[in-house]
Image (cartoon, rainbow, N blue to C red; front, side, top):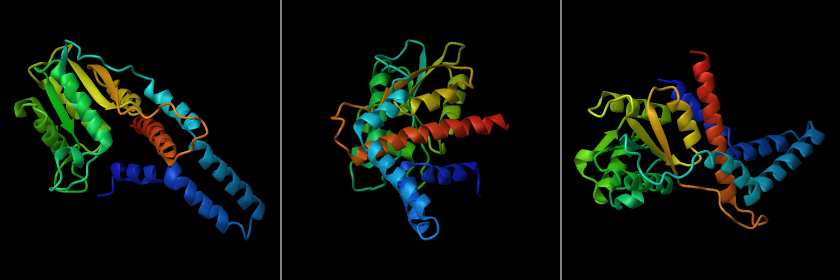
Length: 256
C-alpha cells in the first residue's frame, strides 16, 4: 500500500545535494540547446554550490546549528524509566560480527545508550527499528550487539515494527506511561545523532512526558577551510534531511 511513509522516503531521495544537484546539472545541460543562457547560469550556480558545500567551514556552519541544540548528557537522570536508542540502519550479513553489521551511526548511538544505561541499570534499554530490507529487524541487530556487550536480555526491549522516528517515540512513550515506572515524573532518555535530536524533540513535545536528549555521532569538527571533501557534502545532506523532516512533521500535523 502506498502511504505517507513511502511518499516521504521518495521525496527525501531528491531533496538532497546528492543526488539533487547532479540531477539538476543534467537538466541544465539538456536545456542548453533551447535556453543556453539559463543553462549556463544554472550550471555555474550548481557547480559553485557543490564546491562550497564540500568545504568544512561551510558544511560545519549548518551542521553545528543542529548539533549544538543539546549538550552531551553526562549521566542518566535519577527519574529515568527507559533509555531509547533510535535506529540508524544495519547491513544484514550472518557471517559478520554484530559490530560490523550495524552502521557507524547506529553503533555510536547504541554505545552511548549502553553507557547511559550502565549508570542506572534498573532502567530499560529500548532498541528500535523495523527490518525494511531483510529478515532481521534493526532492533534485533542492535539487541544482538547489546547482549554481546553484557546487557542482560531482560533489560532490553525491542521495537521490531517502528519504521521512523515518530513511530519509535510514540511506542516508547506508551511503554513508559504503561509500565511499572509510570508516574508524572517518569523520564525518557532519547539517544540519537546530534543532528537528529532537534527533530526528535519536536515530536516529543507533543507528548506529556519528561525527557532528556543524549546526543552522539557528531559530524562537525575542525579542518582547514580549504580542504574540500565529499564527506562534508554528505554531512550537509544529513542536516538538510533533518530540516526537511521537521518541515514534513509540521505540515503533516497542521492539516490533521
